[in-house]
Image (cartoon, rainbow over all chains, first blue to last red; front, side, top):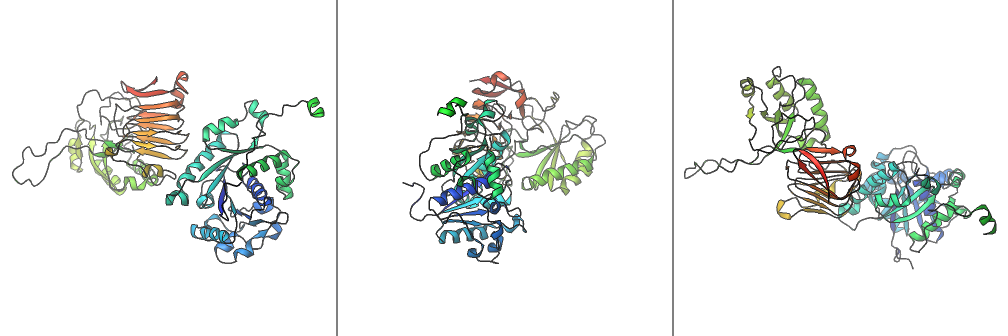
Length: 277
Length: 283
């Protein structure tokens, strides 16, 4: 049923991209929410220390007392810093600190917390990486078992993702210990079939050819993303939108179900077709 | 400053033992040595030292106590006003060890030897002239060893480059057979097959560099940079299944992306040296 999971094996998943603004935090919030909705105990960790966005997108910013860095520095217990989501029972958020910088993260501290989360029975530990390839991003990917590489269909984003894939193959615990390679998945976000058709965007095929990793899903460009971020409600919770549908597909696909890729082709139905369809 | 090690001493054949008595106190050998060539384009010592320090800061371990051959062949206004003792001092202060001067103009020999430097004579092997970055036809030395400044990728792999660990994990000995890379070489990664051929079975992506002292084979698209004969080997070739490269170089001569003819783009090609210039031919 679920090839990703044996009994209570924790999986550390980094959501990363290299480039900023491509939708890492949105993706982290939606995938964590979606997985948790399937009854799996899930935590989303905000590695973007100094900026702190994930709690906003997930609508729990007013409940942040202690943060990730407090726990690393032993200023608070992990249980004190974890925020339980109000909408989905098995979902927790570990927020970033806004007052520190990324130097506050160190491999020992991060490793200790991830180990502790595993002991607490978390099945999915979602690490929301900051942009760039510097320390914060490297800390977010260091302990990963799997990576979801978020890419926009444009050249600079693809190039940065390629760079990040190189780091995932070299600068992670698995790579350094000689373990099995990190499983990588491509998530293409802000995709607009119309712009692809006009030649203003790279197509899914172009990106797949350049990066050469399996496609987890395509998220269409949509205003719903911005609206849901502002509301602090992950888009996946409003199933009427195409973005929610796309993220639901991604979650089910990630959990091992077969789902046909959607949102790649332009909507072909005419006005009349829509009336009668 | 040219950064790659240069095969500065094309073998003149071992001469050891020819005049040996029963118990030789030493062996005298001609050998292939790895030297960094510092080709001067200015006689301004302060400028040289300043730029050198910047270069060294990028790859400090590569240059620490490295022997350096000073090449005067590119000095347009002559080397007469160059202070050799000052130059030696500047290089030593950068933790480099200047050993000899190449392309020495007439009349400066005593100044060079007075500064404790050897005079480097170009080997007279025929058929080794090749194109220089500046198209300087008078260049005779070092025969295979003066990579053009633009051929940045012709660097040994460096631990300072993130994500370049692919190279260090792979065999380097010439006895180990060619280095084979099966996973994609991604932007920012460098793979260097030292004293060896390199076979890559996955794409070399934009921003990546694959370098070999021998041939480079890529059975996938080449979108980044490829360098064959990195230490100077005019017979080295690059083979790739789909040419979309940013740069290809053989033994110091190179072609940039925009110089690649449109009809060769995206094709399976080989790249080789002919009359000192890179040629691209369909496979």
